Image (cartoon, rainbow, N blue to C red):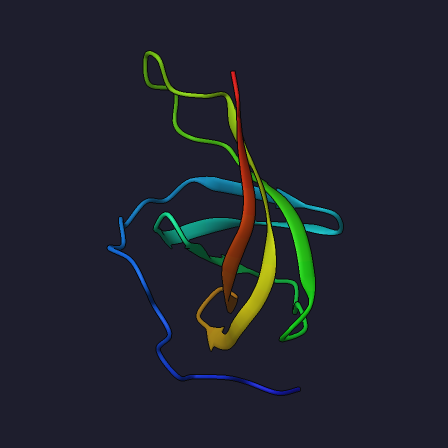
Length: 96
């Protein structure tokens, strides 16, 4: 297992705890920005791999039902809940 602990954040982070779903697992967001997402999960995801996942925002009037996200895993770190996975986003879509 290779772990990358260098901080590569590019944008302002918003600390949100929203459910995340992806093929083979689920998790909860730690923080998000316009360029990336960090979430915790019990599933190990390989550093450098491509991932397609969904974020389900809390129900707020006018908010999308889910965010459809794609990107590359740029950081994997052990956490209390399993692993902290940081993803550099390559595509996002709002689904209402």
